[in-house]
Structure formats: structure tokens, C-alpha cells
Length: 547
Image (cartoon, rainbow, N blue to C red; front, side, top):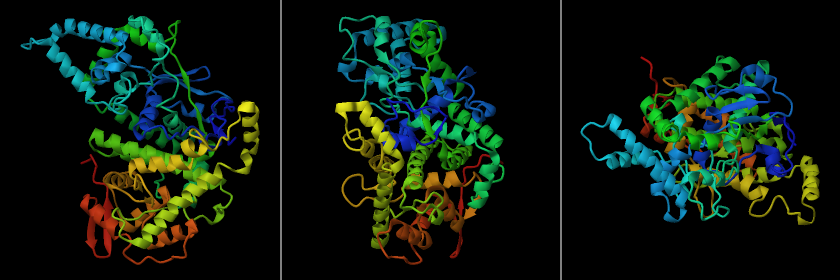
């Protein structure tokens, strides 16, 4: 197994997959873009513990000393709140009729009845209490995130407030007794630790941030200097990163007015505290903790960039919903970058000493319309080259021992771990890379042949806000160099030539001087480019809240 962070032992049930062995537990094709962000924020906002050390829920990360001296073979554990009452109140009315179990309807009526009785406390000249309840229900339904076609309890809120972030809950419909109409008895038929939708990808991203915060300061400084990264001296310092990441997560959690958060807690806990107690605590009144997975210890390099990018996005003074959209893109791009960077380390055909990019992989970007045939061709070659790289990496010779363990564990029922509907290739490997990239618009078309890299307006805004600090300006050439370093994104003649050679599919080495003109036009249309002259343009991050 790769060196894991935190230093835990292999799990014979969850880690017997070559892609999990390489990338960590786990990046999974079934997890949506939104749910990567939601799960990362869920871990950050929950109470946590490492061995006997309790980390309160208002503390985003473990203490720095604990990160550096992580106890051997001890998981990070976290205790997510389930928020069943709030989900029931918000989503039951919009759910499919066949998913509304009698016990669910009974509890819904109970919540409405209790709320009706309490409305009189702040009722003025409004007499229709049911109208007030419908307004409240629609208010919270308006913050519905992902999973609208699922059972109400498996849906998510937009993580616009800490009080809307909840753990995964699955209603075990096939096991429940149909005669049960009592909500208290029905609670045991909810499962909260299956990782069906919140499939550990967000846990992995959170652990990557912990990983970089646990590194040696000299090692980080040396790496930044050697690779000429445009990261300020302050941003390279671990105490600064720790403090700024903590503030950044806090800014996300505090996006809503305090009154809204109190209202959410009131509906979820105050009017029926027994439900949250039974869902969140065991019979002895202790929090129910879930074990986090692990990430590759080698991922600290790409995780450092991820940390800086998150800080820049959260420092920008933008609409909270727009910030969430950018953070979703940031999480998805980090998953793609992590997969490619780790694959490059374990694809023996790639010469890391003669790397073409910071992480020895490249994404050649073609303009959205795809008018330039040669660049479109190189972009398609790059897509294929990235897929081959991932395919070969998860078949590295170091994983031979793992295959033997899989055979021994499965015995006569042995199945090839790479193939099949839940195999490493389709759900964890190169097809995960393609699927996730298509979801955010980094690869088009969504269906059919000719997959190529491109960027849309959301990705462009993410690129600007993630590599440029709010209120600052950099030259267009510097901007292209930054997105090349951070993400392996090639857009001009120089970098496209590197991508052509890296993909090893063509002898094209020159694409003309106007290969990036489309990018200039997109930046200008978005209001993030200042054209000083024909030969000089500045890319700006205008979302600065200072005076």
C-alpha cells in the first residue's frame, strides 16, 4: 500500500482495490460534485477525535502538534449531525409519494403541530398559521442541494450554513416492518454510515489539508522555491495556512444570517430533541463517531496548492452561493489533479526528472467552440494520454502483492478487481476522471466521441479567483504560467507544444501566435482583464472587500 496519511493499517474490506491503494479511500464515480464539497465541510464542522483526544466541533482542524505527532494506527473520527427533523420538515412534501412511510408522515404531522402551537409567540396580524408553516417549508426547500429524486432523508442542503450540513442517512426500506407507524421505533431503520452518496471523497479532501498542515516547514519552502511557485512567503508558512484555512471554513459556515441558523436548529432540535439524540448519540449518550479514510502521504504537494486556492476563493468578497459554486469546482479540480499527479508518480513510462509540468501531467485546452482543428486534436490526445497514464498507474508492479491478497480474500469467488461495474477502472480510475471532468465542463462533449479539454465561464472564474489574490493584478503571461503550474493547463503555443510532446501522439510543435486569443476574449467579457496595449494585458481579481 502507498504510505497513508494518517498512518493506519490496510482495511481488508474497504482497501482491497488497486485504485484505492493508489489514491486513498476513496474517490468514487458515484459521488457528485456537490457532495465532495458537502462531505469535506461536514468533517470540518463536526466534532472529531483522534485516539483519546477530543476535537470540539467549533475547531476546524486538530491542533498542529497533534497533526505532526499523529498516533500510530489511529483514525480521525468525526460525529456528523443527521438533522432528520429538518430534512423531514423541508423535503417530505416534495418527495415521491411512495417514499413517504407512515412513520415519516406521523412525525411530519407532529413537527407541524408543535410548530403551530409555538407560532402564537411571535404572531402579529397573521392568522393563518398553516400559511406560515408552508412559507417556512418553502424557505428551507429553497436551499435544497443535491438528490431531489432520492428519499427525503438522502437529500442534502446547500452548505450555506453549518446548521444545514448533515451526514448521510439511508432509509432501509426493504428491512422495515410495514406495520411500524411509530417514529421512535422507525429510527433504527435509518443507516448513517454506509457511504453510498457521501462516499468518502470529501473526507479524503479534508485529510489532504490535514496532511499538508502536518508537513515539515523546510520541505514546503524548498519545494516552492525549487519550482518557482508564485506563492507568497507568508502563504508558505504553516501557521498562516492553518489560521487562514480555519477562517475560510468559518466564513463558509457563517454565510447566512444568525437568525436563519437559529431557526434551522429550532426546527431540528428544540421542538423534538429526542430524534436528534437518538440519531446522533448512542444508548449511553455519547456521540456516534465515524472513521475517516486516508489519503496518500505523497499528496501534500497538490494539497498545498489546494489549500492556497481555497483561501483565495474565501477571501474574495462574492455572493455566498457563487462562492459555493466555485468551491465545488475547486473540490472537483483537486480530485482530478490528485488522480493525475499520483498516477504520474506511478506510471513507469513517465520520466519525472524530465517533467513537462509541475506534476508531470498536462491538460491541453482547446477553445470552447473548438474551431482550431490542430489544437482540438492535441487536446483529444491529451485526454487519451491522461486516461492511459491512470490505467497504467493502477497496474503498477508494486500492487502485485495486493492482487494476491484479493485472491486469497475472495477465494473461489475471485473477481478481477479492475473490470466490472464496480471495478477500479470504471468507478475509481480513468473513467472516474472522465466522468467528473465532464460534470464540471472541463471535458466536452458529455456524450459521444472526440472528448477534449476546454473551459467554461465557471471554470475560468475559478482559475482567476484561485491563483490571484483578491484585489491584485498580474500580467496575462503570469496568469498562464500560474494555471500551468497549478493545474497543468496548457493554452498557448509554448505549453501546447509541451502537451503535444507529453501526449506522444503527434509531431506538431508549433500552433501559431494566437492560440490564446480566445482566452483573452473570455477574460475581457467576464470583466477580469485590463487591456493596456496590444502587447500588454493584466488579469485582475476584482472581488476585494477592502477600502
